[in-house]
Length: 130
Image (cartoon, rainbow, N blue to C red; front, side, top):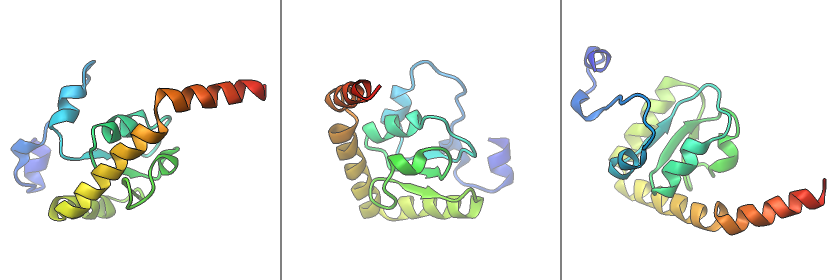
């Protein structure tokens, strides 16, 4: 929070750095936005978890993030640039309609694409080709 205060980001009290937690779901439930500004990303699990809660997600083009999100439809991906990141965050907070549309589309994608039936079908198909 000291760093946020130095940057004059207000209100700094609304930003929480909680560290490691085994149970993140209560944080996701109370969040209004998910930001993953990674320079490298392996799996994108954090994006999928946030999308499952209907959170608008902003992430960088690291790893497979671009494969998970359709830009400006069910999330926003940006270049690894703090100015683009700040602009995307500001846009979500200042455009409730856009945030709502992205949230809805994200949740629908998770329900239709990343479910047990889809995973099972894809796993079985992958085994057939091995």
